[in-house]
Image (cartoon, rainbow, N blue to C red; front, top):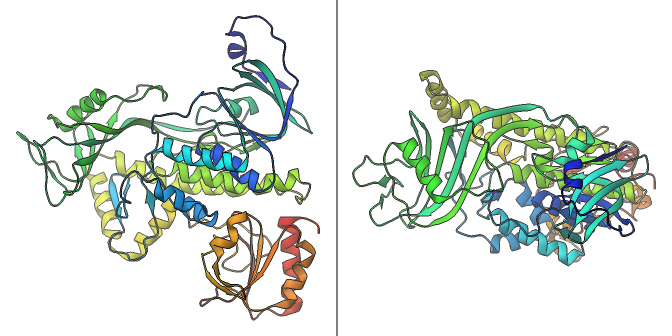
Length: 529
């Protein structure tokens, strides 16, 4: 079956052209945002040839997101590239204090916060991922627009309109990373149910004129008006958020208003539009200076019913949009990491039956978990009556205790996800591998350093030659390492390329039990030896 966007195909009006011969790629990725670029890079690490197609001729200059945080930062560390992102930060790494539904998760009193973020506008994030893609030899075609698709049991064919005319590309798989209004999702016939909330959010980082004084507690003293408090302030016309520091003349301002206007995401917000919103919400004029960052977004809660339809798959905003800030990039880039190694195994002919289907199973589970806390934020944020105020007050009291505060942090970071791991009942199975310091015969290393190549790892932490011998049949696709660590979480860890633990054994397991279980886990995730 072929699906073509007729409007796009006919709008040039130039008549038929001679089409170049069809090109081939292992995987076609539609969309060169953070999710698409991360997927392409992970596929190249796994020895697969992706082709990235992006309809925009250049990277977008408008920062849809102002930073990246959560578990993806740890994954970037495991790939050996986190230092690049840290070096490119546009400002000091903020104190671990994050908005959550109109209140704050304040981790400043914790020595080891469960949630971190880097201030990195999306254009800069995409530039870094682009540079990494160039190093790895990824083919990225900007100004090339997918206008139709067909698939059969063996391949998927994409109709493309490029600067020099139309052509076709054939691939084993197509992945839609083309955003919340995904054409790929529509062509695949995948439902995208959910809720649209009637509110518009505007975020700005601006300088302040000398007339506005930043007090020691972060409040703003505005001439001719009451003091504007740091944090969140509710008015009869919306919500105002203020994040400031006495050491800086730059301040982050955030407004939320109930509004049903449909905005074009490609048209950036202007400073006058933001000033008008400030005036409506606050009721007075709050003078601002130069705009450093301006962005506008609406909130939707939507999740694709399935992340795969035959040879077409979805990732990032094409698969899910969440009604809260600070989670979309984390979720989308983690989708990419989960999908890439499974797709590569299938293309290389090493995938066990059903491996690619676990992408939907695991990442839909993660998306549902993210949807849970972002919808909870809607309830906290949108209530205006005394009952809603009481809910926010009780929630803040709960967060005064360390255990619930940590639990909320891991929930937002996405680090509380435990994928189902059939055949492994160890508490670590399905969780993200901790970055252990490892002592080997070659010296000191870490789990993060071992994961740079994105290959599966069998990590023997208790000198179990019986289990290393079991894994020898998979040594062409699984790296085997022996090491010691000061705080051993298990005897042996079988680690997937996405850094999740596929299987673990403790020292008290008998050899005749552990070895067959390890063999089963190796076969389940990495195929027949």
